[in-house]
Length: 317
Image (tube, rainbow, N blue to C red; front, side, top):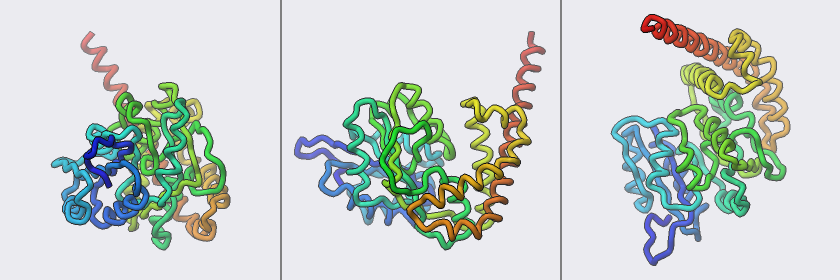
């Protein structure tokens, strides 16, 4: 890595890694980046906010990595923004501490920025530990739109994953990541497109992700995804989501659409995930129902908040 610009050579690429409880995974992530950045004028920035020993690992094993320590917990979006403030690269890459990148990660994504209309580029996500059943179910439910597959890069109206993406530095300084840990990449992608930039999705550029583990984590994280999804859609007010905002009980019908869609994307994936997904269908159904419960609860809470605000305004007038 290059953590300075000695010799008068400017930093071309910055890689920002938000790290929260990353002690078990950060070394593998940084080792993969050492290969991917070889021969380039790059800097790597880790933003750590848990105090679990991750920072000490970075200092001892990767002294050329810039380390930002936060005494308070940061969301994924806030941690990335903190790294953006420090970064000096023309193009800013993002990966999470529980991921490893392929050797050609930077080479394959950076070329798309030759087109000045492109504001951001991203790729797909694969599993590092598919044996973890509940973790694999979370993976399918969260990332089914970004499973690795063969095919050409294309402009997308969807979103780029926060753990496998790159943006122009000037774009992110004008449109920072939202201060969220889930769906911050959805909102950012939407705002970058609103600025008039194109987003490119390359399904063949695959970052590998270590899945979450444990039944309790499975239930907790699906609750968080449902809550975050509702909050995101309440902000975006996309036409396809409005029926679920108007009639939130419809969220319980989502598995009828989502589970077949996951199966189709798994079947199309270049990874042999279908034989893993099919036995997990009941687990994924449970996760979707937990998601629906949290989604409905957040929408109903939003209604109560708006009603209370209107009553407070009426009482003042």
